[in-house]
View 1 (cartoon, rainbow, N blue to C red):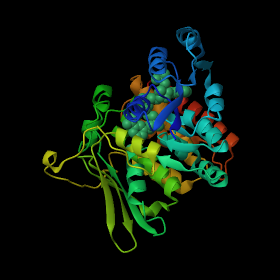
View 2 (cartoon, protein in one colour; view 1 turned 60 degrees about the vertical axis):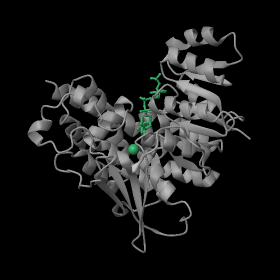
View 3 (cartoon, protein in one colour; view 1 turned 90 degrees about the vertical axis):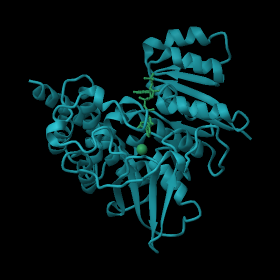
View 4 (cartoon, rainbow, N blue to C red; view 1 turned 90 degrees about the horizontal axis):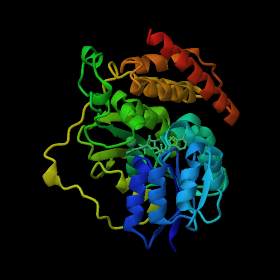
Length: 387
Ligand code: NDP
Ligand code: MG
């Protein structure tokens, strides 16, 4: 039986790499649904190649173009964000790969879990915003969430055959990003172009800027907490600039297991889509000929304040990670528009966390309200910063 997949965010970095994986295994994987925000030309090309049952284009103004291009074929075309939430309920879908970016992943993920679909989760922000709600619902519905994020896939792979052995701690590896080792004075002057040049990974803009600020690692600490049911002191971060060890697990006896591979998202994507089977892969494989040394260092929490902000947000709990996430999304976009500087990203997030209303036991509507409030506060702060 082929696994029938819905890719939410098929035109993005993860989405396009997922399609490369599917292309390698046409006898095992089949595309049922593709969705995009506004990239109509790519969505049309993908649809013509993979012939899904349906596509969704979120941006209404792009609908006509997609509709006209796909009209001669047996492919349904829908529009709007609501349709992304609804389409995941389709009977013919087995797995939903959530490769949307930011807050936009939350509601479609919840709907897919409600509908009993297996989740392959790339969109870490979903667990950052509402990890408790999402994992509780998944437990109630008996739904598995397979991680796509490389660190969490590494932990998941290390845990194979170990599910009854308690975890002492997990060690998330971080590349350190393009600004590793830079002083405060140097960070004052870094540019958007420099921040977008990640040394090891080629990813979407949001996660690339988050990697440069170490917020990405902060988001991943929270993601790990919910995926693997860990206490925060059990989650450590170590900088490993070569990005070959993707993360590690230490068990009660002191033994540490690690997962290694090329810095190539197609491996964790394939593992999530085909779990528990390991299918052969044509993608480049790591060999020790390529790497003379593995090095490790502590993250620089003084100069990269976002990591501590994330630890603080999850320590406070409630809606604080949601507030932090919204502030980060606004800050990253403002940085990409060159309205704020790199070091103003953590400053803005910290101020936003201090000014937004705290809710200790939030519902979905509380999360929506917090997301809106935090965005409004962050937007106002940007106006003040740029004066
Ligand atoms: P991209 O920005 O490359 O792609 C995002 C995708 O989501 C695109 O298909 C985009 O459509 C769509 N999209 C964006 N906003 C909306 C919206 N509001 N409504 C509907 N669709 C939307 O992101 P990445 O692929 O880099 O990242 C996806 C997720 O995976 C993120 O949460 C990221 O943190 C995580 N991740 C990514 C990694 C990577 O290597 N890229 C590694 C680990 C995790 P369109 O193209 O039309 O704009
Ligand atoms: Mg990662």
